Each structure stands twice: as structure tokens, then as C-alpha cells.
Image (cartoon, rainbow, N blue to C red):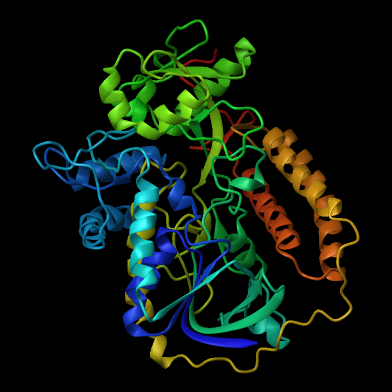
Amino acid sequence: MTRKYDFLVIGSGLAGISFALKAAPYGKVALLCKTTLDESNTSYAQGGIAAVTYEPDNFEKHIEDTLIAGDGHCNLAAVEKVVKEAPAQIKEMLSWGVDFDKTDEGLFDLHREGGHSEHRILHHKDNTGYEIQQSLIRKIRNNPNIEVYENYFAIEILTQHHLGEVVTQHTPNIECYGAYVLNQETNHIHTFLSKITVMATGGIGNVYATTTNPGIATGDGIAMVHRARGVIQDMEFVQFHPTGLYQPGQRPTYLITEAIRGYGAILRCKDGREFMQKYDERGSLAPRDIVARAIDNEMKIRGHEFVYLDVTHKDPEETKMHFPNIYKKCLELGIDITKDMIPVSPIQHYLCGGIVVDLNGRTSINHLYAAGECSCTGLHGANRLASNSLIEAIVYADAAVKDAVTIVNDIKFNEFVPDWNDDGTKLPEEMVLITQSFREVEQIMNSYVGIVRSNLRLKRAMSRLEILYRETEDLFERSVVSREICELRNVISVAYLIIKHALRRKESRGLHYTIDYPKRMRHEG
């Protein structure tokens, strides 16, 4: 079955939904959700959204903080764009019904997080992402120009390759015509033709064995664009959040927001000793890459599996008011954060690289845009500044809409794309072939491609991954398409890109720290 839309949006987090809302006045929009509208990385974002709001903060300070965190690898034009356009996007979110916390005086209750020189984080309690997601969903549901497809999984984007042409990285003017999409309820594959396609598929967390990301975060958009020979960049810069709640076997890992350190929480060893001052003069408020490596180092030299986050010195009622969900979650585990220290350890959280886009959100493939975590705008550089991701998503979704509407009426649907051909395939004989390979990828990445790396570990990871790649591609060719086997293909592609880019970078920078090309840490242990 073929369906036609002016705009096809793959992904339903902040980037995807905001693009759909803004594009709807200009044509029919299809919004694809891998599961439901409610489940996305956006919904799991606790801390908040960064924007210059009140003096003494200003654009120059936010730009400088972002550049420092990015460790000399940011695109200045992208940084300036996001920072300067952020206030207007916040204003629009307010008009959509997003509720940010305010003080008794009626001003926004701004938080400060690691790497920020001023209080500039707008938030809703400690579940900002969920508040944003729910507010936008209410708008989406009432828009007659947007058709929401829940439990629809994009398999491949359509290009000249599907018309029988040979497409390589050097092929000029690769074009996107839409996507093949799996209806997970019927297992039927539909052809979605579109004039404009937007990739907003979120993160890659489940490439790793432990992550704060939901189970749907398998790097699908990046893998699809990679197979379509689009340009992918900076995949080595994988951010590990310093403070995931230590719960062995729990997936996803519950995140203890950065904002709690901005509020005054202190990182301590098991003996209660503070340690961050040994590594950085900013202490517990240093940028995430520094804090994560410091915690990793302390855990290794002491043989411990976690450190503590201590907020017991703060006013108990104020703590419960600011962080009600964290208080409730920890209390369920027998931890009263107003009296007890919180066990935490670094955990995979965010990807700074991805599908390369320009300032208009355009990818290297014509008529294909990308926004949100799957994209690489250059804002984050080698390390994302806390709470810059949500604002990046909506700023670039806005830029993509403004650009796309200028060309959408000049684009014709490509009527020559054939339907998906599954002749000769059959159901996999044993699902364990998929599930076990998936676990192997996760373990390879956790063991060899984590916070601290080496060429020896990376090469070993690549050799293991090549075996899994060959086995999986052979299985894919013989099997009826399922979400499970497509996700396995995607995590293998993403893992390959992370390792490949890490091996190419002959230095330690930001989130990529290798013992073969070390930068001196302030304290070596």
C-alpha cells in the first residue's frame, strides 16, 4: 500500500512533533511513532531547557559556556543560532501550553547546571521533558492536517537505490522520496511517498548495555541515513551522564538530573570524602565529560561500583519541592535523599554526533532533513552542555520547516518506487539468533567503547562487530522483516560508526578520551 504526504516525519520527540506542528499549515503531515506518541527521549529529559532569560545572563555567556564544553569542536554559527533563537522558541512553547516553574514573584525559577556560568535552565519540577511532550501531544491530537501513525517503524528511506541505481558516498544529488514503513500490528510494509522527509529518531542508547534512554533508542535514523550513503559525523562523542541511579540490572537506568548538582548536591566517595576538587576547580559543577571520567577513575582505583551524590545538607522540604520524582523514586528503594546519600555511576546518555545538517537542518541527501539527537548540527562539538539538547531540537526543527516550505510545492512524488519485495523470505527459525547478537553488541560497546578507550580495545570491538555484521546481514536477507531484526541491524551500524570514528581521532577531546593520546587530567589518581 502506498501513501502520499507532503511531509513525512520519522520520530515523535520534541524535534519531530514541533516540526509537524509548524509544517501542518503548509501541507499534509504523516508523523511516525515507533511505539506511541508518549514514548520518546524527550519524555525522559528531567533537567530542563537552556535559554537566556534574565540579566545578568546574556547571549555571549551562553555561547561561551557552550564553546568551552564543546572543547574546541563546536560550529560557532550553529552555537550562535541556537542561543540567539532560543528565547523566541521558548515563547512559542509557552503559547503551546508548556508550563515552566515560576517563583512566588512570577519569574521563571531558573536552575543552573554543570558548565553553565549563570542560572538559565527553565524546568518543570524534575520532569521537564515529559511536560513538554504532553503539551505538544495535546496540540498534535487536535490538528486535522497531521496524521499520527503509532506503532509504525521506518525500515529504510527511499532513494535512487530503490530505482535500481548504484548509490555510493560519491553519488551526486542523492534524493529522498520517502520511506518503507512496517506496520507492527499487521506486519505489512507500506510505501510512504513524501516530498519532504524529516529524520527525528532520537538517540542510540541501546547500543550500550546500560543507558538512560528508553528501549526504542536504537539509532534507527542514523543507521538508515548511513545505509543511504548520507554524511555522518562525530560519532565518537558519546556522552555518559555522570549520575545514573545505581541499580544493577535495571533498564533503562533512572537518571539523577544534573540540576541536583546545580542545586548544591556534592559527589562523594563511599567513605564520604568529596573528590571532584581534585579534578576540576568547578568541583561537582564541572562539565559532564570531566565529572564522568573523574567518577570512573575513582571507582576504578578504589574498586567500587558507584559513588555517592549527597544532598542531605540542603533544606529537606525545598529538596522535595524541586525534585519530587527523584525523591519518590529513591524512597521506593529505601533511600530518603533528604537523609541518605544517593548511589550513582556514569551511564550512557546522549550522542553529540549523527546525521550532518546545515543551518537549515538539511542533510547531504536532497529533500531529507534531520533534527534532534540523531542530527549533528555542530552545536555540541565534542561534549554537550547540559540542557542544550531540547532547545537545539526545537530551533533546528523550526529552521527545517522554514526551509522546507520554500521548496515543497516544487517537488513531485516519485511514482516509480516499487513496493517492498520479500519474496523468498521466511520467519527466523530461532529468535535467539537476534536477541543474543543484540546482547553481544551491548557488551562489546560497554566493555571496549566506554568512557575511557584505547586503540587495542577499539580494534578488538571492531573485529567482534564484523562477525556480528556478517551474520546479521545474512539473516536479514533470508528473513521476513521484523522490528527486532531491523533494530539489530541498526545498532550494529551505529556501533560500527562509533568505533570507526573513534579510531580515526588521534587525540583525546571532549567525550572521546583515549589512553593512547591522553590529555592530562587534573588528577591522575
